[in-house]
Amino acid sequence: MKDMSPYLAFVLAMLVGHLALEWIVARLNLSRLDPQLPDEFFGFYDREKYARSQRYARERTRFSLLQSTITTVVTLLFILLGGFNLVDRLARSLVSEPVLTGLVFTSALSVLSGILSLPFSVYHTFVIEARYGFNRTTVKTFVLDLLKGLLLAVLIGAPLLALVLWLFGAAGKSAWLVVWVAVTVLQLFMTYLAPVIIMPLFNKFTPLEEGDLKKKVEAYAREQGFKLKGLFKMDGSRRSSKANAFFTGLGRHRRIVLFDTLIEKHPPDELLTILAHEIGHFKLGHIRKMMFASIMHTGLLLFLLSLFIRNPGLFAAFGMEHLSIYASLVFFGFLYSPISTLLSIAMNCLSRRHEYAADRYSVCTTGGPEAFITALKRLSVDSLTNLTPHPLKVFIEYSHPPVLQRIRALRAVRCDQASRA
Image (cartoon, rainbow, N blue to C red; front, side, top):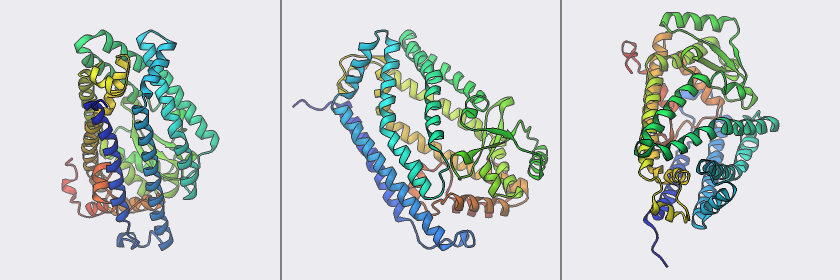
């Protein structure tokens, strides 16, 4: 028996190691579930609903572990049994032009991945989320979302991939730099256009109607010197009863979006503090910083990728008969996974810091913490949020601080320092 390729050993170790880490974090997180309701939430959670939130956390965690385990096992078998080479043979039998072959190869892998993940998505949406009263997605909406996602992949994803493959083949050693510039330009362009072209494919956005809330928000925006380009309500209730708000777009397409479920469940004073939090992200430069970090991350990824294009050892590890640029992109993803995980943890740490800063901005520009704290509590209860996550779970996966930590931080805010990011 031949010795295992170092590349193959590394890839297999990363897949198994990532799954093991997920199991460890999940078990630690479940061990932190405490049937005793935290004092901060007395009057918001009743005994039965709090117990229900913990059942929800357990069920979602176990389901996620099942999905990850099956996905990892299938991926391992696909690698070891030469699945990538079989797909490459199929792609080469259909087309001979390298870029088109790459599109067929990646499309086939995407279809296989989609087939594997579809049953899990269906069960999560129509069984787990429905069981806990969250799901409002109809079968028609679910299918249409899949078809729209496929359409976007064909109209946007395929041309972008074709451009990347062509540039790596034509631009020589500097290809990664050229691709980085091209991808960055497209990323900024899509950020600018997404609110008016892509997002409306999935949801309906309507300007917030006249009333007390709109008056409060417009007055607040003037007071803060924030040019409010658009304030919209989104029909999030089409898919879920969970509520949210977010900031999106650039330039004249910059807008703040409120889920209709959020508006239904919160009075204007609480909604204003939520909107102030989103405006705080903009005023404190968080959006620019995160976009810059994302662009730098893309540059690092592409530079490292350029070092492994058509690497014979890497292709041998996956049992490939032919070297290609398109398969290099796929195989490099396995090598990059530990770096991606570390960078994701770093980005989550930065994001949590930004959330604390935006929280301070909100309470110090709207008159105090109580309305915002109440809003956070309602959001947590309505979403059956786990109030006591394990610190390791938070460190690795959370982009927002746990709600109890946010509340403690809000009560300790000194508003003369609120503007410091």
